[in-house]
Each structure stands twice: as C-alpha cells, then as structure tokens.
Length: 232
Image 1 (cartoon, rainbow, N blue to C red):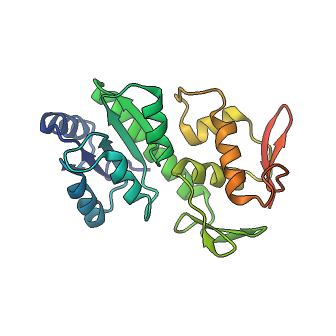
Image 2 (spheres, rainbow, N blue to C red):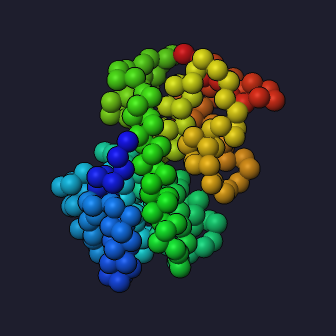
C-alpha cells in the first residue's frame, strides 16, 4: 500500500502554515500536495483533483471549514481532518458531527497532522480492500459499497462519515461480535481520545436511521457484556 502518491488537499487562510505543512508532507515523501486559502477555492480544487484526504482549517475568509465539509459530504466520503484554534469540546463535536473524521487544535505539530492523515489513508485503504465490490440489502435498506451510500426504501440515508464507516465495519464483521475497543480502533483510530460513550452514541444514531424500530433493533444487535453484532 503506497500512501505517498495519494493526493492531499490542505486548506488554511494562513499561507505560512500551508507552506510549512506542504514542506513537511513532502519531507515525508508525500508528493501530491495541493494548497488552498479559501473555502470556495477548496471546493473547486476538490472537484478538479478528487483528493484522497483533506486538511481544513475551520476559520476561512469566505465560508467556514464546516460549510466546506458539508458541501463535500453531499458527494464524497473523503477523509477530512479539521484544524482549529478553538479547543472547546462543543466546537469539536460540531465539526465531527458535521462529517469531519478528526480534529486537531492549533498550535499543532506538523508531524501530528501528518500522522493523522496517514492513519486516515490507511483506514480508507483497509475498507477498500475489505469491502465487497457490490450491493448488500438488509431489511428495507441497501448499501452500495462502490459509492458508499445507504438507501432505505429507495431514499438516501444521510449518514456522517463515521456512521457510514461504523456500519461498513459492522457489516464486514457480521460473522462475529465486535467489542467497543475493536470498533474504536478500526473506525476512530487507535489513538482516539474522546468520550467513553462515543461508540454507543453512534450506534444509537445508526439505529435511528436504518432500523424500523430503533428501540428494538433487528440488524445492529447489542451482545451484553461483549459488544455489537450485525445481522442481515
């Protein structure tokens, strides 16, 4: 798996930060690094180059990084890492719930940014290798692994990137019960630092979107004391 030829799009209104990050990425042998200083330019570049990963500052001159993420999530599940001077947990939750995959507070170490990007790229490559190249139906739902979309009764189900990858992970491991720790490592990364109930909250949201009766689920089952299991 060659991460170094992946296309990275960096978006920040601070040119010095952009140039520093680009230099550090190239120093680590990432050769396809693109820069943008505004939200609109970032969306235009995204549509042109189709990056494999994006790093977006939340504060941009024309539109917020969250708005950029929201627009991109309409058509793509590309991994998105947010940068922000805001360290409040509420800001982090908003960014992640709007479709971000990771969040780093300024000031930051460029090496930490690169490590996060590499981790997201590895997880994306894993899902690409593990996911069958077809469509799976369960209950009233259908998941198209090719375009990473879920439909219920023919209508698109609006999942965040984390919700989608959580569902995909459960489906890929439907022959077994997976623990909270296994889910955290696979979907959030082994260095995830967050709330203890993160998995439970995301499972609950998934059930609300795909189960007919979320209070009595038939697809995402809780195995008491062990974790969760997916049943087609």
